[in-house]
Length: 62
Image 1: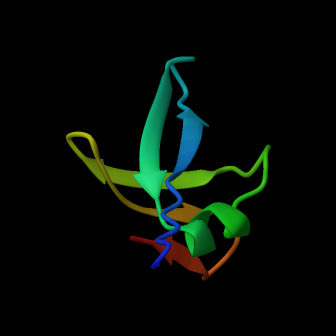
Image 2: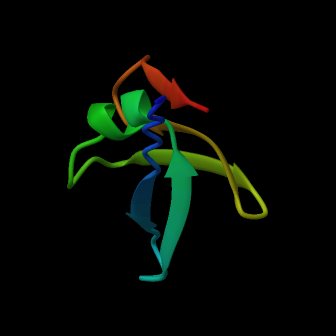
């Protein structure tokens, strides 16, 4: 018998307007983001493209 484990990770961003946006991301990405992070969110429609923290050269990307 074969078992398949599939996990879906979501992250929620609150933008300057106060609106919240939720995106599906990889587990690696969800582990790199911490509540309170501030930076530039990049997305197209409902697809998450990346996040770059202010003051950091590290970019979290899909």
